[in-house]
Amino acid sequence: MLLALALAGCSGTDQSTTPAAKPGDFVLHAHAVQVGNAEGKPSAYDGISILVPLGQCAIGIGVYDTGNGTAGAHWTGGTDCTSFKVPAPSGGLTATAAVAMADGSVVGGTNALRRLSPEGTVTTLADLTPRPDRINAIVRSGDRLVIGGGQLGEDKSTPLMWTSDDGGKSVTPVQLPQVNGIVGPMAANGDTVVAIEQLAKDGPLGSWRSADGGRTWQLAEINTGPAGPIITNLLRTAHGWLIVGTGEDEHNPAGRPFLASSSDGAAWQVVDTSKLDAGQVVDATVTKSDDVVIIGSAPTSDSKSGCSAAWVGPVGSMHRVDLGCDDVAKATTTLADGRVIIVGASSVWVRA
Image 1 (cartoon, helix red, strand yellow):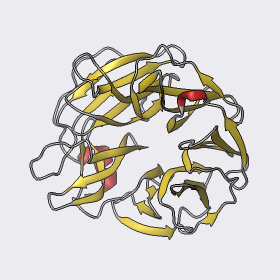
Image 2 (cartoon, one colour):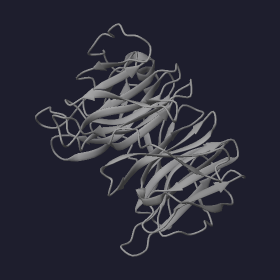
Image 3 (cartoon, one colour):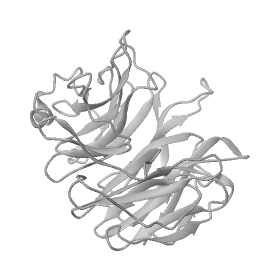
């Protein structure tokens, strides 16, 4: 089945109708994500982990349990983007980071780049050398792709970056100022590209900024204090750039959302999140009204391990929305029509 037709609504019949809801409410669509293990039960370890907006819906990318082992896979959205199905149990797009292209394809990667065509065919593009252990981000700066990740080591990790001017068919390694960590999330705004170190093992967090589409980079440091955050996302907002992650210290052993903002992508200020409830962040998106939606898990009175939750609102005045304990929120994005979707192991939440 053509991917273009799937995105237009031919990927399957939605399994739930859209309940009436006020703008800003999250509406749950249960049993809306195809799961593939032998018992037909959703798993916190399989399923969609990345959502890439494409057309009027999105492509989900993750790991599919065929019942005879797991495989990298992609999911296509239903008519109104309230359900996701796997076009084929095998042969899907395998990627830990991905970006939509102007021609309707999706380019993703692990240690090589791959292209999911608008017709649904996956082809292998360039190998990444030096060979990375992890690719964490792919962004577009004009017609150029910028790819970031790194090699992991017990004592020393190495950040790596590449650019491609031909849609991923070939790549050029970038000379990157070094830190003892790997490149995490990235975001682009025209020729300006910003990348953040995924985790600061010791000392400040590294921040790279390029003003020429990823050709050359300057390194800055972000003093995160005792939080020691793991960075999940870098968002481009109407006011600049926003780092999102989870910070943990002796005062917040359960974790708490970590935020840092910058108007130029070079100088950063840590945002006070002490009034936010504890929780672990897994993904984030920014809405067309410039609200931020952060998803993850948060402890409740009935569950020490935490249930699915979202933190929503303008930076500085966010509030928590409980999404329930029956599923695990795994990925979120903002669609072309302004709706925010959250995908779990088997559920989809939609916010108008």
